[in-house]
Length: 474
Image (cartoon, rainbow, N blue to C red):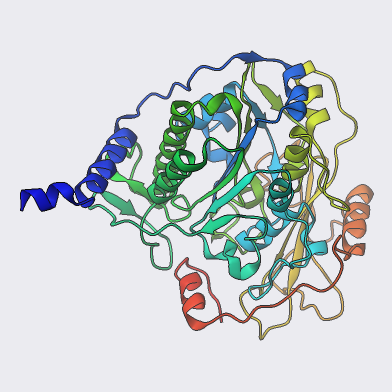
């Protein structure tokens, strides 16, 4: 019996899992492996190198103001804080929706939701779309994606350009793991499965030039390992505990990169698709409104070298800018006809303390009936122009404006938490520059790849898997 046990791989997998959990639980102070100090000139030189990898970490449903690096009083994110301190932190980043699929379609294609048209549950990214993974694949990168959110599954076209694009097999969830999922059923497994999959990818393909996309979901699930919890038991506390838990997973990922000699030749990107509301504007959850707690997300860039001090980019930017910036950093051809900007000049200006032109407008859009295909579209948009956030319904043929959606205008200069609507009864219209920016946004419905957005028919099993995330789909 002992010989059979010795020859079986099961004990080794169990031991590896225990060691992995021990590493997560004992990592109280994160010190990133040392790298050489770099300068703005080293940022420019990245485009000439042929050894730089990319690891893109997407933390689903992470709002920026819950990270210590973004001013939160609780120390929810020691790993991300330490990485931001010697990298680039974008101070105000606008996600293009408060629902994953629409937001991720804009992030990957660098186009506004109005243009790419991926707005409802049956919509998919068309095969003709320009996807960054395809550009990296053509450039010789080994491409892999590990995801746990069904809205970015191959069913909806997000696998384009990936050599491997899989949902990790969920592990048995230990008793110590806690979930305070606000709605729906909890996902099986945890983000450990993604991190372990990443470690296996690095072990297998670390000698090649690679692009690795990791989509974490435990923050979305308010899920965390109980011994690592630092905060209370309320719903909002569980959200913070989940951030702290996923932060530790990122620490393990960084250590894996360092152990394999990859930390000095990898760009690490940390971003999110949308935030989460805790009744700041009367609602909880996401995918229902477009207020700041739902669209203001983090974006941290970590280079193969350290910046001292780290760079903070203050002007407003958006998730649509992420891939135009990364492709420019890598010296690869730009995506054509997109809305996102290459922010490398803005990074350089911020590092030098120079101003960088007039701020660009940004937009977020949501269809209130995205999960109800029998109802007419009910789209609305948030326009971010200078200090203003203007939220309004899209009134056009075929749309059903929401009767309960008030036009809202907030001015962050005097109202940083955006609590005072300047467009109450009898208070007129938004400033001219805000209305003009919205008009320009609404006028464009021409995706760079042309054609209509495809629709897919989902089987009941797939629908139930998505309903398990807490979404209402009829």
